[in-house]
Image (cartoon, rainbow, N blue to C red; front, side, top):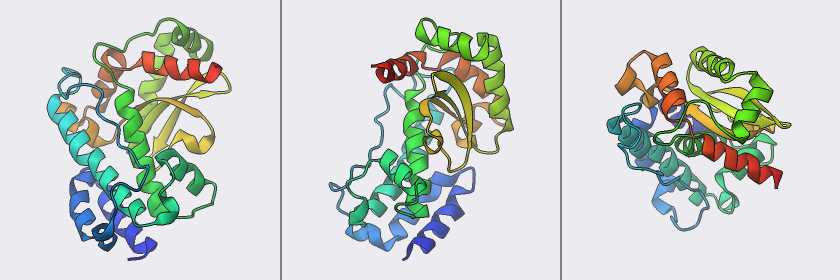
Length: 242
C-alpha cells in the first residue's frame, strides 16, 4: 500500500464526525501494521492527566472515555503503525514529524495529517483541568490585558472563533510576546505558523456532542468558565522567558 492509498483510506474515515471510531478497522487492514515494531518509534500519546470523571459536569466521563480511548487512541495507533514501518521516521517526535513535513522535507501527507491530529489531541487534554477556567491571575492576566484589553473581550473573541469553525480547534498561542487566537481547521496546527501553542479547545463534534448535542457554544462556554488550564499556559510562557 503506497502513501497515496494510505491517505485515501485515512481521509475517508477522518472526514466524518465519528472518524476515529472506525480507525481500528482501518488499522487492522493496513498491511504494514503486521510487521510494526512497537518499541521503535518516538510517537507518544499523552497519559490522561486526571480521572475520566474529573471534568464533570462540564464534560462527562462518557465523553472523555469515548474521546480519549477511541478517537485519540485511534490516531495514535494508526500513526505509530505507519511510523514503525518506515525507518526514516522512527527517530522523530510528533512535533518534528509535523514541522519536517510542513517544511517540505518528508513530503508525506499521511504522516502529516495523522501527526497533527495526535499532536492537537495531546495538547487538548493538557489544556483542561478540573475546577479551572474563568479569568486568569498573575502572568496570564497581564497577557490577556495586553493582548485583548479585558477578559470579557477575550472570552467573546474565543467563542466567536469556535463558532466559525467547521471542525477543528481554537488555540491560544504566543506570537512575539502577545497572545492571539488561532483557528485551525481539520489538519492544521499553529506549529505551522511559528507560534508557540499554549492551550487548545477541540470543537470537533466528538468532543461535545454526547453532552451538548448541537449546542456547541454551551460547550465552549463551559470549557472557558470551568476547565481552561491557565496554569499550564503560564508554565509554558515562563519556560520560554527562561
